[in-house]
Image (cartoon, rainbow over all chains, first blue to last red; front, side, top):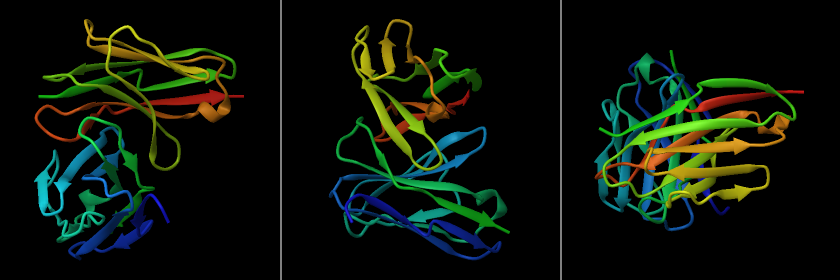
Amino acid sequence: DAGITQSPRYKITETGRQVTLMCHQTWSHSYMFWYRQDLGHGLRLIYYSAAADITDKGEVPDGYVVSRSKTENFPLTLESATRSQTSVYFCASSGQVGYGYTFGSGTRLTVV
Amino acid sequence: EDKVVQSPLSLVVHEGDTVTLNCSYEVTNFRSLLWYKQEKKAPTFLFMLTSSGIEKKSGRLSSILDKKELSSILNITATQTGDSAIYLCAVPSTGANNLFFGTGTRLTVIP
């Protein structure tokens, strides 16, 4: 399917476990992003990537790890999940700097 | 530090009303301002504004940028229940290749 897809859509995990959220896009966009969305904070950037093998931290990177070995995939890993990481996570991609993103449908993660 | 402030935080109106949502920004090297609509899932793109004073329109929605005042407004005329959503404003971040978002305005349209 064309577009940007995230998986899983919903995830419940326990404190301390490692969790990986997947993001896949079919446009060969250079830029990919991970945001988290929390009430009162809006969308906050966790990590972004300008190309395969190039990643950089955003506003709230602590506790997260990313990789981008292929242009189309940008997984986000929570190394040891904490309750404060309960959130909705959005992946997005863009072909050009400063232009609009296309967002995935989001992953709702609950850490218990 | 980049900043995007949206107001009001939430708004409840009746169908048929006209609403104006506000966005002010502080960013070095302004390039553009974007508006998104978020219903239950992912934000969807509405407008991108780069030039001051030029209105962008799409049906009942319109937006205009004021670079002198570092702000933008989003107008929705003859509101419908389907307009109920969170409206997000964003600017490309200074020195980084990402969008910096405001916290959004939650609009609720009552029948």
